[in-house]
Length: 72
Image 1 (cartoon, rainbow, N blue to C red):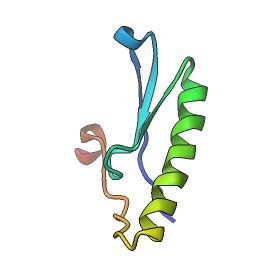
Image 2: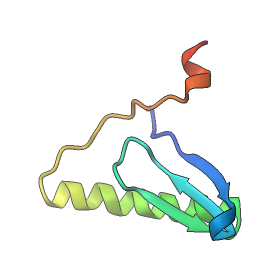
Image 3: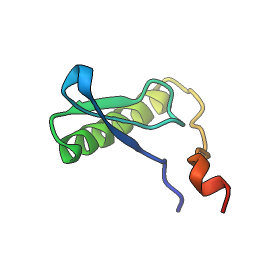
């Protein structure tokens, strides 16, 4: 099963790590470490999907691929 891509990056202004899932609009999380940001965004993904299902909203297919992988 294909899963959603997670971006993970350090943001100096926030002095921490941001993780986001491009296929799930506004699904992101903050952590003081990369591991914490990833744990938090996985919780956010679960909540995002549960809310979409509960409200009858469509669930997007995992499609996002970073540019570096699109060239291969």
